[in-house]
Image (cartoon, rainbow, N blue to C red; front, side, top):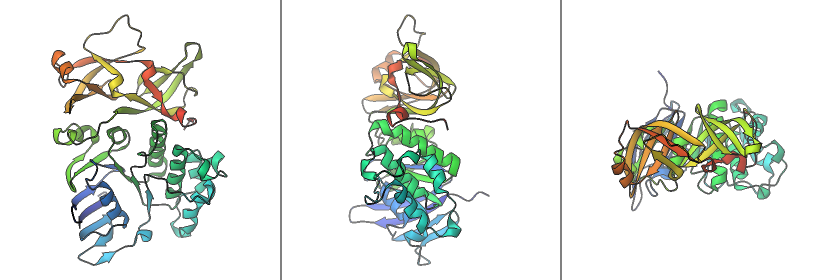
Amino acid sequence: MTVPVAHIAVTKRFSQFTLDCDVTFETGATSVFGPSGSGKTTLLNCIAGLTRPDSGQITVMGTTLFSASERKVVPPEKRRFGYVFQSSALFPNMNVRKNILYGYHLTPEGQRTTDPEQLFELFDLTRLLDRSVDTLSGGERQRVALARALATSPRLLLLDEPLASLDVSFKGAIIRYLKRVRQELETPMIYVSHSVSEVVALADEILVLSEGRPVAQGPPSEVLVRPDVGTMADYGALENLLDATVVERRSEQGLSVIDVGGVELAAPEIDAGPGDLLTVSVRAGDIILTLDVPTRISAQNILPGRIEAIHAQGPRVIAHVDVGTVLVVELTPRAISDLALREGTQVYLIVKSNSVLALDALDGGSGNR
């Protein structure tokens, strides 16, 4: 029987808010999702030991860290968790190398499972090691913060909206680094976010909180289409954040061809060669949906697909369309009515090549990983 990543059954009362949560996290990447004030950060701080619950129990990897009935409280520094905040919170008096090695040297030798050299390589930091952290971009600072957290060989990585303060050009790159953490280090993570785009791109499982209580839990593709969740989701400028591989570079045409889940897309020319991996963004509002095969149009990408789910979000409608990979499309209620769209409808998506934005390239390069 597989031991769950974590089981949290706690109550924490404040003057105008109560967290009352009983949940189990089974997978390697869980997102805690919900509107502002729903209790996401409070739950994360209870797990980390920064906030003490009034009652209940917290168990991680089979080890009890808090039990009100047993009067057991493991202090934060003994829990062996990595915690990355919205702000990178780096030590300004240290360079990149010393920031990362700080936590490594504090970890007892018998508990060290992570090689700092591996982290330098994993986060593409080798050329930055001697730089002052004050000279780094926002994306580079968060990469250093992630490497520093992982240098402590944590059993669990906690992330509190680590992309919220970053420009869109850096977000895709950080998401790719987080995916590398899962693949290469196999470190489980609990990721707090209010961004639908980030949740869809990163999480295996999502826990939705509202007013301090769980309202839904499961795969993002199932949870986010629920009407009660859709009304509280902040879709904002909804993006599709997609892993891609460069197929070829056509400099004479000013294009690159990329593969996204078996689907080829034309994109503006990317400074990367065949086989290089990157993350691309396609805004949901930039995708056009039609019932008929488009002809004699300038758009480079025409993708046949099937509508998997439709749900309303205020004055707009969100459709999930399977084109070999699932794309999220923003529509109007009138479009749904006029085209008689429903789950199962066969459609075509039109994606202009200029709408496919390579995020890793904006962060300073990709890399064949």
